[in-house]
Amino acid sequence: MLVDTHCHLDFPQFDADRDEIIKEAHSRGVNRLINVGADLKSSIASCALAAKYEHIYAAVGVHPHDADSFTNETFEEIARLAKNAKVAAIGEIGLDYFRNLSAQENQERVFKQLIGLAKSLNKPIIVHSRNADNFTLEILKSLMPLKAVIHCFSGDDIFLQQCLDLGFYISFTCNITYLKAESLRLTAKAVPLDRLMLETDSPYLPPEGKRGRRNDPANVKTVALKLAELKDIELSELEKITTENAFNFFKLK
Image (cartoon, rainbow, N blue to C red):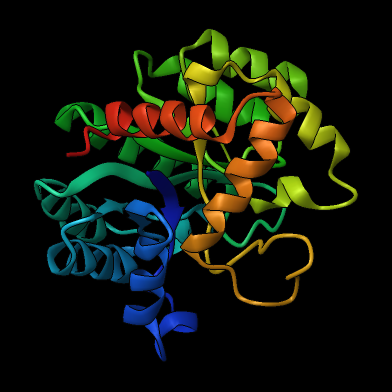
């Protein structure tokens, strides 16, 4: 059994064959999926997918790219959705100072507000951090205790250790297979097995050899294979541990 802890199957890239892609992943042993909201519309769609498929769970949130358009009404709707029994987390939320599609002060405001929602509902958070690791960490530290996973980890060894010290989980996607991602592979190798989770971030970041094409949840197996190689353990052991981590973190059934 494998768990893709972060995908976006509601995105338009899957409109033509969404059901087929979901069935294909399931047939390849991806028995749980977390479909992650990026804004209010996709959070609603994530909940709809979770309602349709027993093995799909939802996360609801607003990506930092959309922080400028975040209103009180948006928060109220996200809060309403978050009470659904199949909403496993609040996310993705965080900071993106690479593209800066929303003002940094708005990104920080929305990040803090949605962390507050997660704490009030006792749900974990899925954190996006790009070119903002120090600022992300400052906010997370100020609002501890928190149950968090840093998704699609891309930070350095210092950020990794700080996250581990706070008890956070670390998730990797297919970009660990990229030819020029040696430093990321070294970082992944350093993550303790009991803090490790797998994701695809579909439709983004397909594996090496498939770059330029759409990613899909079946490729979480590629992440597992690479991490098992880096950890020098059997694939079955890597799958067992990361699946247990995901089940425990997101309270899956």
